[in-house]
Length: 362
Image (cartoon, rainbow, N blue to C red; front, side, top):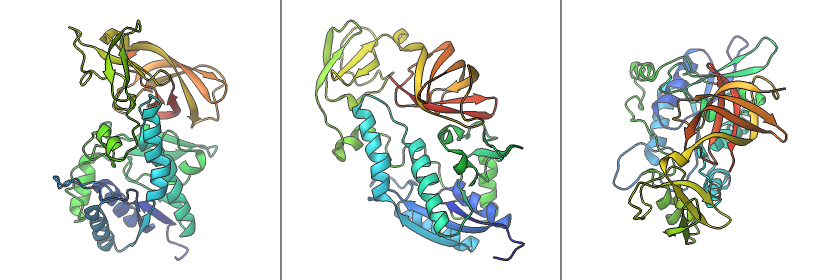
């Protein structure tokens, strides 16, 4: 690479339009681009009855190869199935067993997309790692890295990136951060990329039909230990096949004849109980998060006013964040929110700036 060229960047390619367009934009910006696909799942990610895009399946890899040929860049397929099973799949199952609802996409970003990919980048002499996430990074005057929402509010993915550290953000590139999804597709069509018309995949990549219970059964990661369904007073209303198959806020599939709608309001792994109640019992105005990661500063010195998202598709709500010891914080919501779920990420914002986030605990 001559001295006038931009640095080398490794682009994580999933086989979708977003990552493909990100690679195309970086090529046009003068970067020396290397495409990498992580094979994360040991089986083909297609379902037999569907011809839909799923990451790391045979069709996705073929599309990535076609994109790389079109762009004239190197391509590597790296088998990370063992690491994915260890860090993401096993975590996914363990969280459900513990009565929590996991968010595997955050862990995958942290451990693999911005963990393994950086290791590969180092091995290939690449200074940066890029993905097709809709988010923005910038460097503050004092050198501190900041993470901001993507410009397209319907596609913003900053929620999934809150756990990235300063060293990772300093080497991350998000070429789509200032674009909308419509603009991304238009760019892909103009450049005749093989992925330009790919439909979006909204499910968890290793649960293609969005039926996580069936996935846990088929992979034998569920204990399926029967127990009691009780109300808030501890009265037994029915039986369940395993708390892994229930989430906070769930109404359907309880198998109860109570004469009124009942919802899962708590999961008690110690006594292997599913606790149900009325819709109003789902509302809470306070909870605790652990393993906090702060981005604009190392840790707050006092209370922080912020907008808090308690799940990815949550619009956010005003709150006061009280720092606690041990990378924990107490979140006091100004307005009670429904179905605050242990195991999910709570992410803190100031306008479009990501302040940080943590994991909701029981």
